[in-house]
Amino acid sequence: MERESKKFYFLSLGCPKNDVDSELWINKLEEYNYKSVKHPDDADFLFVNTCAFIKDARLESTEAIQKLGEIRTKFPEKKLFILGCWPQREGKKLLHLFPQVDGIFGNSDLEQTIDAFKRFNGSRSKVVCVPDKFAVCNPTFHKPDTFPYAFLKIAEGCDNHCSYCILPKIRGPFRSLPESEILRRAKFLIEKNYKELILIAQDSTAYGKDLGNGYNIIRLLHKLDDIPGDFLIRVMYAHPKGVTPELIQTISDLPKIAKYLDIPFQHFDNEILQSMNRKYTSEDIEIILENLNSVKNRIVLRTTFIVGFPGEFEEHFEKLYDFISRGEFTHVGVFQYSLEEDTPAYSMPNQIPQDIASLRKEQLEMIQDEIILKRNKSMVGKVFRALIERQTIRKGFVIARMEEDAPQIDRIIKLKSKLKPGEWCNVRLVKALAHEFLGIEDRNYHT
Image (cartoon, rainbow, N blue to C red):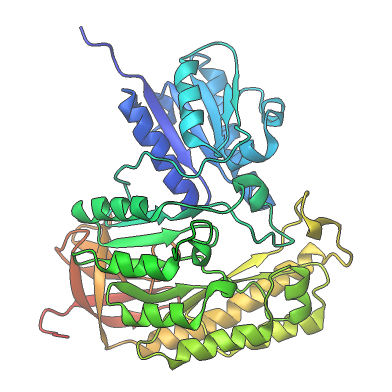
């Protein structure tokens, strides 16, 4: 008689880079004959892959752990584990913070930590596995459950050491995945009919700097563009230092590279940029924008900014506000500065009160909403090629997305259609809101 598979529930928090790590855990567990379930009550093992980037992320992780901890306390035979960035940052301290937890696993070497869980095998003793060394890459790769798009991690770690950021300590130094491995994974996904591959890293434009022999993000984009198939490649998390005229031209020219670029500028005032240790100026930002406006194929921009950074006085904020008000960006994310121990910014003078920072965040979001709503309304009546992303609860309706928008964070299109996820269609936009459209299929339109 075949032994019944043990069941696990997996909750992934944080960024797409965490999602990729979670996919590896899930697929490895399934290889070990564990069965994934949708509800924690049905599971023998409970996992939370945490984010520890800022205070709000740790609060979200805390709430998730406590909720699962209640189930763990009610059913002692269940086991609860904390994974990811928070264990990598705090180590075994988390066992004292959450006594109901059975083990913690860091993310510096996922193969090693997953093997440690396999050896655990229901032991009554608690397990801690936070490797000191950071792996170059995780060799195992599986089909993700985000069809029709997939996040493709091309590098890990970061060497930029921005003064507000703890990630270099959590994720380690920058290290590129070998180009051959990226191409292998890309071809695998394309063969599985994924229509959009999203390149992610802490700093995607630094790709290849540690490999030598001419490896870089431009060369990688050319190699990916050469793969046969009907798909898009999207570049996320492009550090401004690496957004060269050559990269911009490459994105504009190559047909399979989405005309979209995510460049986290974080601020526009030179004093604040210097305090952040961003290693560029507002003048450099203006040059990047000029270069983007000079290419033939328009590239849609996403960026992020931080408000309330230490020393951000009213004149610094006004400079940022005026910059955003120019309407250079289709998509803008605004974050309130988070005071993080073990970062240089933690001990900087002139810390900004949280209520002031919160108000500034709201002001920037309001002006950007006005900009994007105006832009969206100008698109009504026009036809755009869109990818069917998922079906809705309402029968006969689907969610689609244009090349101008990345999944999970940008605009969507709601339309009535019988098409299935992964199919392309032409959509005529009929109504615009700030963050979504209503559309209709236009089968008579030809590009």
